[in-house]
Length: 258
Image (tube, rainbow, N blue to C red; front, side, top):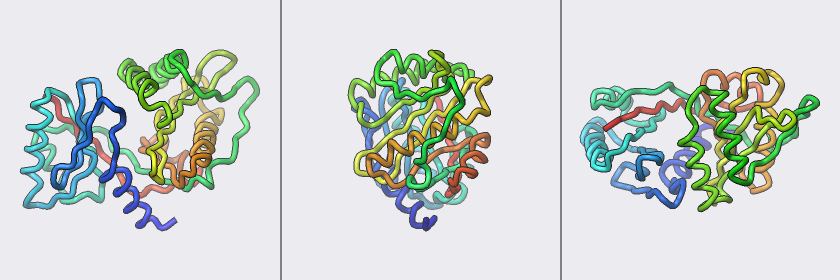
């Protein structure tokens, strides 16, 4: 894998040419910025920018005005290789608050799709209805200790409008959901995104994370996707590296609230 070329491809397909994540939002390209705008329950933010020292502050102010007029919180999703080099500092001065950095991890699908055997009593199933997504939200709350009502609502919206753009997979211990993760597809793109990957505490260390990666890689392979992409927290990065993923950049969300 040519790391430089793959990163360029990622920037072009998944940032500059990004599609709306559901029909209720819009993607706009305003000069050197690509943003998604929606309502208070949607993900709002800047996904790509190509700025320099002379244009950055004015563009940051323009985006604050745009989302401020909508009355919504928004995220400026920066990457380590974005310009200018001090973009994060400029966002902080403009009132943004940095969230935890994540590693942009990429792997070729072909090397990840071999099935992983699970211990007896554990199995993977793909959720296809509202009941399954409710179980996934339940796992999310137990695994991460955060409210999953917004995630649940977004999943139901996508089920209604874009069911072919993602698959939610559950790990079950008997009939109890103990882990959940999803894969997201962008039509015509070479990348599939792996999201979630939460496991309740008492079932960690049993191979569920690796099995969910392999399962979703097989789903991506069936669609002809070439690469898997993960925004990995520090807890996930070592696991992904052992599986063969490579860090190509670091992404830091900067949050602005009205």
